[in-house]
Length: 380
View: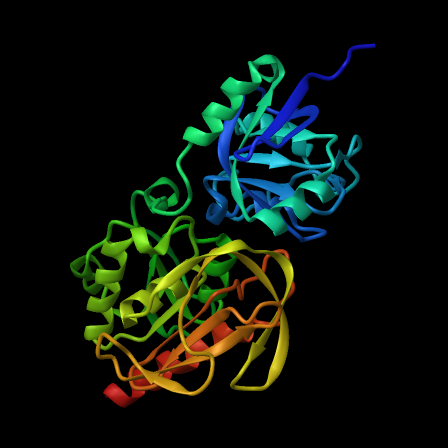
């Protein structure tokens, strides 16, 4: 019987967990974060927002349904590494055409299995997200002090601008479904395919632009509105995207941003952002929509948040009129949405496209469509 290759997870505070190699072999470094979703691991792995992060799944059994060609959210797996307790030895789904382990190897994703993921999650919830490294195969035998040194020398997530790593290089276009509203400029900071599909399904001709796009590039397509996607990195390190968004707002174009786009709208309005202790990641996060008074169960992946008063309205420090916090996270009272009252702009911190669910917040795409239609009508 051949024994599995060894692997070790090393955290920057010196904590070590020994397990078995999973996926590709070698060394990977990144910020260790946990995701609480019990399903949808394929959508998580292919979400560009996870670039630079070693993702730990809190659900104990991962890989049961394998991988298929329909549920991927982008062109590859983006996580820096993967941590699971019990990888499934058998794939059981009629849509699967590969095992999770095979795709991890194909995309060069180094992982570890067979460790106490509950213990690591509790540690991160107490100490906060931190840098870590997975050393597997021959690299598991590296000197422990050398492994820790490599982890502690890895860049922290704060201060990193990762949009260029995940964005498209050239503009792509998805045609609208149903009655056409007009061209929509989507700045690709790490957009998911489900987001593009939802926008096209509302009648937008979706032009996905590289993250390096200028205001001239945006205006060249004669857009009826602009959308900022989700994405990885620190919003405080994305000054160019904030400046671009201010140009968009100055042009009077309707704007909708999600996740990273919410943080960038906050900064464009003149608000600050900060790093959360361990972030929100998973598909079971309760959020209050202050407009309707309803509580939604939502999909999240963010480690940064906007600083803003939760109650009442306030003036935009950058001169864009009155603003209010539209959505609040009910676990920790984090700002989960912003709405400008004097200009056509709003955003949410979570994922209304919600692949692989839930779909409580899908109405936000309709709210955006209605805002654009009303703005275009008023302009005529």
